[in-house]
Image (cartoon, rainbow, N blue to C red):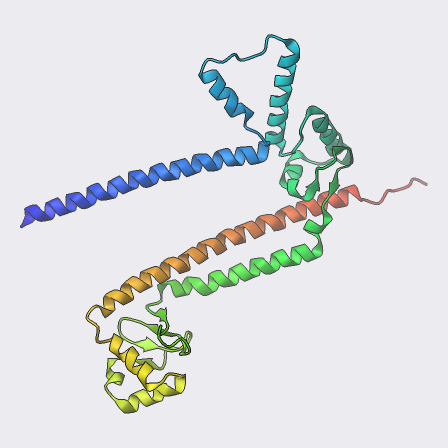
Length: 286
């Protein structure tokens, strides 16, 4: 008897570790792709990666012609500048104009990198801020969304461990939704009473009280028939797993959204401060 059990346990262990290895490989691939995408999004090109591939296969590391070599170095200098300071300059002229603008107004490169999306980079000779993106209205909308996602999290987290599965009658879409557990059914989300169990289903007088909730006699009989199913508890357990997965996914998305809203509020504040620094009233000496 012990030998078959040992084989089953071994198979389960093998299957588990095989899936862990597959999952780890998939996550590693996703992480590498995400890293490359981040570098490309920040630097605007992947010349460094192309250089690595070129050198790996034995390609020349530089041009013999000095003019071509200067162009090659300039391209890589601009790419490094874009990645380091998160400023979308396309050539050395634009990098110098950006540096002049930063020094003129006493900005910090780190602050400029944070508010890249709040600056209009179309013309480096006259850089301006996108004031609409950090206006009072935009800030209030962001705060409203932040509160909204906080409410979703605080509302859904306690429900994830609920023993009740939200269901509705497929053949009676006009009937209200209700909640099934392994023991009974309830009809209100926040109220635990009244509940319908197999005991109430055996009494016609008891079922009459539930007709006031918007259910017909046939619909109540249908609900009562659920309790008589042999695999009723299994269906409820499987349904709760699916419901919990959906709710946890919503919570995860909401937490990520809260993080994004907080980052947006921080960057809006930085952009607002830099904008005010440009538009400080000039003092005249008397």
